[in-house]
Each structure stands twice: as structure tokens, then as C-alpha cells.
Length: 387
Image (tube, rainbow, N blue to C red; front, top):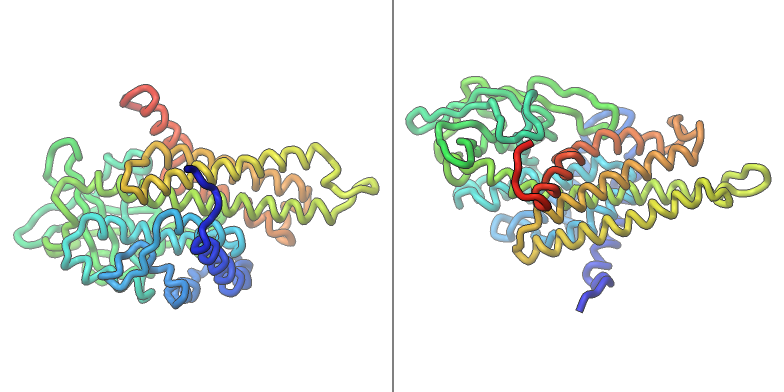
């Protein structure tokens, strides 16, 4: 039978996530947006009991507190909606991006060495796929890694790398000499203190303050051969598998932000009067808001299906792409409508929807643009074809 009620356990973790957000995130949201400083204190709070969110993608054997993806979707949506600061949701995303490739493909020695560091909240793990000239076309990486005896020498740059300056290691995807269908891309763990690696710059963005765009440089960066994750030449498949998982949890953040926009809009529309009546009497505003509310529920159900498939061990690339398309567009629609409902006030820093607008606009490009999701879906409809 198909059921739509949350279990008692899921209701509990939903309440815990709301409690965490209200206590640790909401009071800091405006400050984070103003200072643009990484909220490391929130990351550390996430590692404490009973939450232990920093370990929710990590098996118990490596000090993790594993949770199903479906449970994570509930937690992340609630933290985003209640916390009013998407950058804190990105901290949760790092627990997946910075560990999934290691959990799924790395040697036992690498898992034991690096996963407990993230699970305990000591340091994050960064995910280095995107480059200055390479985004959606992940196979066209320019970063190189050549074998030199018992080490690999890495040269190149990475961009849009979340929290690299706070991470114990970077998962680096680079071109190697391997050939074949995976185009010679391999994955490596590069410890943050490795000579030849540095964070070149941190570029402040219009939204998601506290996150920042970090560009990394690898110049004659030598890492032990045992830091190769899995097999040489299979890094692209590892990267795409990880993104299937983390896109699903990212969608939950988009849905949470859309929900926050609706809640803020409803509150304002009840309080604000024009021509003697509250705004919600104006169908030009209330009807579009009703449609957004319906689309939020649709996106959540689609995303729950993707998470359910993941937890069953089934492939869900297309389902996750569909959910991301829906979640991205409803988030952008919700935030645009929220500003419209607030009128001119919505464009001032006196109202939170101004911040939501900036956050949503830049967040929508994370882990694959809406157009790339449409491409994945269309390939499923028409068969594989080149762009």
C-alpha cells in the first residue's frame, strides 16, 4: 500500500530539526548575511547529540550516525524553512558531497582515516569537481594528475568549492592517463595541508552569504598513490553517483526555502491592508500563492520518491532530475512572488524576502542547472544523444 503519513520516528526527527534550526540558525541568519563569515559554530553544533547531522551520511563503523536519505530530506527541508538561512543547509550538503565518494568507493584505510573527522564535526570534507572553465560538462576537466612512482602529481584549478578553507581534505577529480568510456577521470583525496595546494581566493556572492565561491589551485601537488579513490579512470562515474544522492537532499533545501517564502507571504498578506481589506483578499496575489503551495507539495512528493528509490538501492537519476527541475522552479517562483506581495518593501533589507531572493537566485545553479536537469530527463525520453 502507498502511504503518505510520516512515521512516528520521522515526526520526531522533523521536530528535532525544527528545534535545532530555531535555536542555532534563526538567531544568526541576519548576522551571517551581513558579515559573510562561515558559520563554523553551527557546523560544530550539528555534530552534537541528539542531532549528529555531520555524520548522517557516514556508516557507524566510522563514527557516523547514518540516516536514510528519506529522513535526510525531512531534516533538511525543516532546517531550511525554520532556520531562514540556506547557507546552514549547505553545511548539511557538505556532509554528503564531502563524504559520498569516499563512503561508496574509497579503500578501508582512507575511510578510517578521513570519515571520522567529518562525522565528529572536527572538520569538513570538500568536493572538487567544478573548474573555472568547466561546469555542466563534467567530463571536460582540465585538472591533471600524473603518476610519478608512488605518488600522483596534481596540477590545475577548481572553482565553486564549498568551504574548502574549513575542510580537512578535498576530493579532487582530475584527468589521468587512463582511457575508455570514463574519459580518464580519477578521484583523489588531497589533505588540506598538502604542499602545492592552496585556496586562491574566496569571492563573495550576491546571496548565500557565509558560503562564498572558493577557487583552489594545485601546483605540483603530490599525494600518495594510496589516496586514489577506487580505480584509476572511474572518477567520473563516482562523481555522478554522488551527485545523484546529494541533488536529492539539495532539492529538499529548495523546497524548504520555497516553503519559507510562502509562510512569510501569508503572514504579510494577513497583516497588510489596502483599500480597507487585507492583501489576501486580492485574488491576483492569493491565487498565485495557492498555486505555489500546490507546486511545493508536488515537488516534495517527487523528491520523496527519489529518496525512497535511493534507500531501496535503485537508480534514481531521472527521478532526482525531475524533482530538481520542479524544486528549483517552485523556489524561484515562490521567492519572486514573495517580493511582489511585499511590494517595494520586499526589495529592502527590512524584510527577509529580500535575502531569500538573493539566496534563491544563486542557489538555483547548485549541482546542475535546471537546463541540465531537463537534458537528463529528455535523454530518458528520447534515448541518449549529444548536446
